[in-house]
Every structure is written in C-alpha cells, then in structure tokens.
Amino acid sequence: IYPNPVKTNLNLAFSTDGIGPVRFLITDLSGRVVWRKEEDLGYTGAFIRSFDMQSLRPGTYILTIRNGARQSSRKFIRQ
Image (cartoon, rainbow, N blue to C red):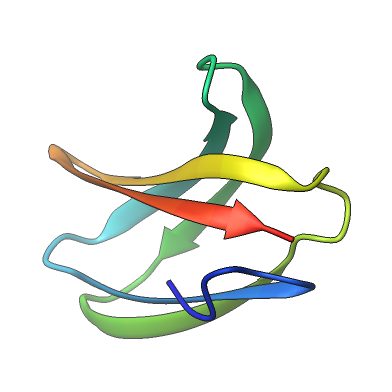
C-alpha cells in the first residue's frame, strides 16, 4: 500500500497465483466493512491498482485482499 497515509488515492501492488475473483475489503477498526470491490482476473501475475479513497473519513483502516484461499491484510491511515 502506498502512500501511507493516504490522502486521495490508495495504490496497491499485489500478485496472485490463481485465476479468479479478487476481493478487496476495507474495514474500520471495529470490523465494519466500509468499502468493497471485486475484480475477476483472467491470469496470474503481478498487478497494480489505484483506488479512490476520498469517500472514507479520516482514520485508520484495514485493507484485506482475498484470492481463492489466499488472504492478506494491511493497515493504512486515511488523512
């Protein structure tokens, strides 16, 4: 995740080893889902995505990426 803290756009570099849907979830620290997106990837490899975070209130959040059985979470700050 970069930049962190985020002002407007969150940039995300990630890789997959399986074809299929990738789910992006952002939760606040209480666990409430505040943003979600799903993308169906047709191939494996490395990806970079940029997401507009201006709708999020300033605070600390957790971004979780799920692809098949794989899951990764990172904390970030929205300024």
